[in-house]
Amino acid sequence: MFPSTDLTRTLQPTFTRGDVVTLLVEGDVDLVDVAHKEALLRAGRSYGTLLTPEHAPSPLQQQTYERTLLRHGPRLGALLAGLSRTVLTTHPEAVYVSLARAGTPVGCALRRVAADAGRDVPHYTVSIIRGEGLDPEALRRIRAFHPRATLVFVDGWSGKGAIAATLRASVPADVPWVLALLCDPAGVATHAATWDDLLLPHAALNATVSGLLSRTFVQARGQLHGARLERDLAAHDVSATYVDALVALARTHDPAPPAEAHMRPITAAAHVQDLAATFGELDPTRIKPGIGEATRVFLRRTPARLLLREQDHPDTAMLRELADGQGVPVSVHPALPYAAAALIASGRAP
Image (cartoon, rainbow, N blue to C red):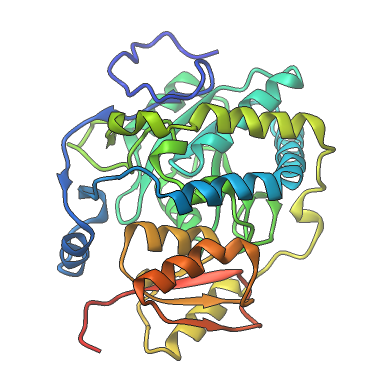
């Protein structure tokens, strides 16, 4: 399946052996707390050169992960099966390239579902970073290994569509590629399992559902992007069992029809930016639409406001509890095209 090129220096995440080749290396990066990170970002520091230390998931995070997997399990199975069928039918020479970290467990599951259908689809996970782009060295290696393949970039969900834009700016014009997402409320994927803004279980966790991989960061030019292996969190790791659960669900549920069969959303992100402007926020980098992106804001950034489509939707329970605990104002907007959105604090005096 995978090339024999020496990959001994790349990180070995805690997914089941054979699920993924990780084109990331362990490296050094500035570890800073959230407040310091926000100050450095406002001063112009690249997001891809900073990392916030990770802690064990809280009981709220773990509970949200478990309850969401139980609540959405049947639908997730159907969505995965449907997405796999669409990709395999459309791209006979596909290579899965999941975007670390949220795409990695999805890519692992898709690889196994493909194997069930008799297809041995290689799967790599690579770094993509806002303001830095897709890791060019990882892309170079994959192209050398699979020169005729269509690269199927895999991620969990969309927010504004920034990842799709970054891929368009990073991948050379002569490289065939598509973007496949489980949940695409922004409507930016080539292949989407659903346009709905659905909470995926792994959005509630970080490294402990991502093979213990940290968020990725840039290193020297010509080197693979880096990551840390959060070994101190091993006791909380559910990465392999999560992929097992997703694959079992996909095997026992009929494939859902592709989202492309329904009308693609075209103004979802613009609607949220217009709404954010009513709260005085005009900087698109501080506007994070989508339940997955909003959750990331509350786990890794400094939130300023939480926007909800419904007051009591079960998918936003964790967000509401985090907002209450942090004193973040919450407002309900029935016309919001996402289940939730978050605004990041600007650091300016109110």
